[in-house]
Amino acid sequence: MINKRLLVKNLLAHNDENSFYDKKRFITIGEKEGKAKFLKHVCALANSNPKNNSYIVVGVEDEDNKIVGVDFFDDSKIQNLVNAYLDNPPLISYENIPFPHLPEGKVVGLVTIKSNGKVCALRKNIWKYYGGAVFFREGSISLPKAFDIELKDINSEKVATIEQHAKNNIELTLDGVIDFLNNRHADLTSHYKVFKEQFVVCWAGHRKRVKEKTYYSRVDIELINEQVKLFYSALDEVSIHYDENTFSTLEYVQLGLGKQQKYFPLEAVTITFLENGNYSIQSELVFEPPLYDKKTLHHILNTNNSILQKLEKGIRLNSSEKVDLRHLPDTYLICYLNGFEEAKEQMELARPLLKQTDQNIYLSLKLSLRILRKVRYN
Image 1 (cartoon, one colour):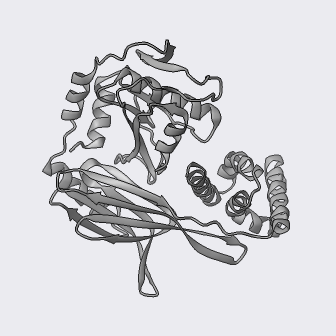
Image 2 (tube, one colour; image 1 turned 45 degrees about the vertical axis):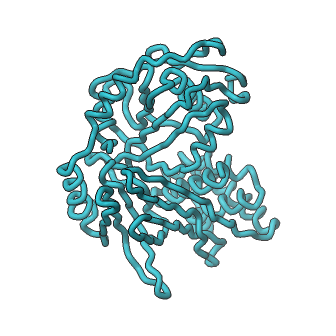
Image 3 (cartoon, rainbow, N blue to C red; image 1 turned 60 degrees about the vertical axis):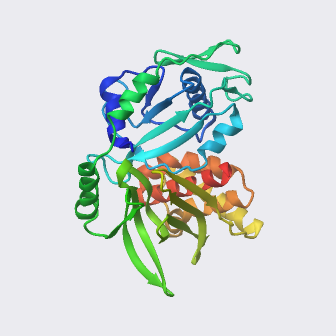
């Protein structure tokens, strides 16, 4: 079983960017250019390594390999994105790897790419790349190549050695459990569960009981053996269930207009642990967005746009506008879910303004964009 934190360290310590490994300060797959560049690198790494894994490490400075981290990214639909744009798409996963020195909520992203052994190519045009384009790695650069080029296996031994050096052991697992329970989450209700005598899942959060059901907020869930953060949220409510073989979560999001707030189920995730030392993760989007009167939402959209214009110009908001500002991320999301496409663009424009204005509202905006991304990919 691979300890993903050790794997990241080994990749950074012993390798410059090459034909099986790339590093990024961040990725922006919510925008066309960022999405296109990400797909290009995935295509190139898959074609350059037809028989072993390739990796992209996210949250690292390019010049000195300093680990600075990125926001927790739980997009379980990233395979859908790859399938939609690539022919012969590789298997791909994005995992969130905690590092002790990073602030709460910051992680290192690890993208694992496994080729299916066939030539991977862009299926359709995106940004400045044309459908049918095939990419390969030359050193640290992803370059287009002729479509009928032969796939060559040149990295299997190197990758196998790196992965072998990142194998987990009992000491690392015990240290991880103790650190999670006693140090990082000493102020929260914490638990752990061992599955199949091999896998250790730890979770922590503020616990509350509502109508004989238990919910957690400020939730952190980790698979300790692999040093992978499975879930993190400073805002959402989560219910947790488990038996001898599975560990399941159901995430809820709070949405509504004004004081009419309700909790809506967003995504159900089930991890199934197997006797052979493997596990699988299945996710299902169960979100049904609330529907509202179009005239009301059109008024709210115009009000939000006006608030953003005032923030951009440095104009002071009145008391009612300050109240509307607190609800702006949620109401923009509701507008988008009810057919107002421009709301997404306004949410992106609001990012830098809210980051300078109010960190809590900015955090709420990031949550709203995460919900939007999940709905769109699904």
